[in-house]
Image 1 (cartoon, rainbow, N blue to C red):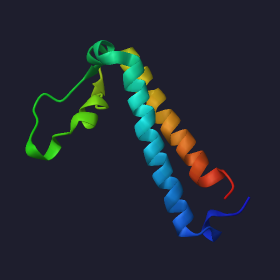
Image 2: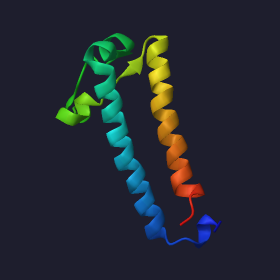
Image 3: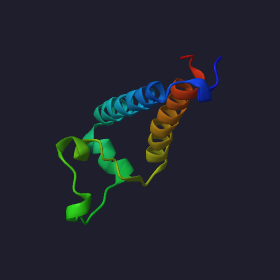
Length: 96
């Protein structure tokens, strides 16, 4: 396996962008699978919005908030664990 120092920065940047795009679709799929009712029960969303933290339609759909019960913590760990684990593997471990 080649060390990351010897890889072109454009290739590393492309992989990071791939991880961001895949993470968006993964979070969207998890939000779709959980559904709005369970999302409302398992997560608490921000109550007060200002100009600086307003989101668009897709941003509101994938906005979970913070977990308030154990099911929310499991979903939180599953989302971030998969994104960070696969992202780390794809950027640093998979051969270029």
